[in-house]
Amino acid sequence: MQIKLLFAALAAAILAACGGGGSGTSPLPAADTTVQVNLGDGPADRLLAVGLTVDAMSLVDANGRAVPVLSSPRSMEVMHLMGTARPMAIVQVPQGAYTAAAMTFGAATVTYIDAAGQPVQRRVPGPMTANVSLTPALTVGSTPMVVNLDMNMAASIAIGSDGGVSMTPVMTARMNPPVPGSHDPEDGGMHGLSGVASAVSAGAFTLTMLQGMPGLSLATGPGTQFMGMTGMGMMANGMLLTVDASRQPNGTWIAERVHSRMGGGAMVAGVVTSLTGSPPTQLALVMHDGAGGGMLASNLAGTATIQIDSTTVFEIDTDGVDLNSLPFTPRFDRSTVTRGQRVEALSSSPMMQGGGMGGMVGGGTLTATLLRLEQQALRGTVSGYSASGSQATFMFALPVDSAFARLTGVSVVPVYRQAGTQLRGLTSVGDGATVVVRGLLFFDGSAFRLVAARIVGT
Image (cartoon, rainbow, N blue to C red; front, side):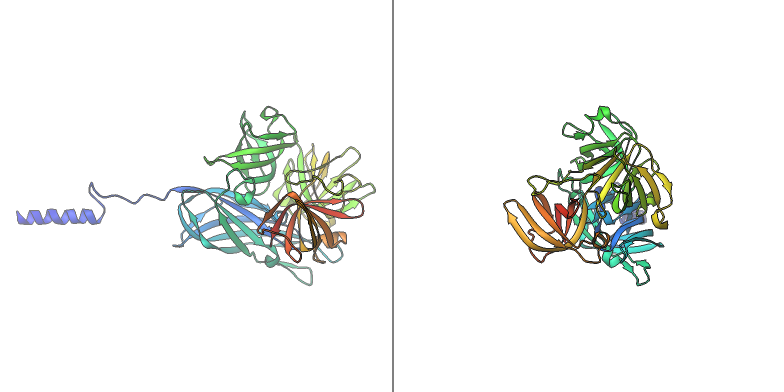
């Protein structure tokens, strides 16, 4: 009898130690929380475009466990992200503390401006890797988080005396919870994303994009502002759109602003590097973005030839830029479009693929129905800062070897800070400060003027 009792006690002890028996419990898996991962760009003055592929990315916790972030490679052009960011992924991540992000990049296409003011394109082979320290650690709890990754292009890319290019990605990271209702990507929103409409229904659609996230499901509501159409009843699959959106408390996305660009066809955005004819009949762009028919991710950082004529409509994209009470009349037309400006060309026809300008790869041709002036960013030093009420002006000295200065021959540009200008990473602007100004760059035939949408500390 004693032996039986001994065996029974021993069996109970073994069950308890192994977590067996009716009273034992297994640890529950960590809950998942939404994390938005953005990619932005630190200034690199000589570069005009850098197209690359993020092949893989993982968040690494304190125990060395890697959590994949990307389900597939992401194509990105990063130079147009100077002074802003673009969503690369929105994923569900197990709750916990993460101390690093590990990234693998494929080959990159780098386009810069040489001393003669001409674009030069070089191909950098992959793979390339970057390990980004998250300091302080990214703590994922029950609240969604935003991870803003900045690629320091000036430190990442070296241009040799022979014109050759090498690249070693150097990254930094900032983390914060999303700001409710914001459409700024750094705060968990989305601003100025261009793509093609698909899966259109009465109150929702999917935006399919060439770079960053391949597709994003968006809802619309009573507060959605429609431009170029009266509402969802006019939206159709294949339509070219530009969208601002914000995250809702339930984790879904709602479109705050939907701008119909074209009923179909293609869109190309980039920096003008040359013009042919007077008035111009042809523009050469180094590509930053694209959408629609005939568009390929390999076009990013390549060149596009844009045909224009007297029927081409010229517009200014005023979204996010305060143009009120300026001391000059903002103008963008066939006689004032010039080298160094960032524009968006739209056509009702697809882009025709072909050889790049000057033998560069990633080329194509588009006949523009519409040409729009778009925001761009320049880095420089502030002088002569003068404020008057909610407005201010200052002179902005750019590095003399910057892509803009080499393209245009201009190294000092007047900047107009407006009541609606946003400050990020700084609380004030004054003489001697080195900052990035992002906004609309106007040319009146003899001088440039930059109206600031945001001013960013460097």
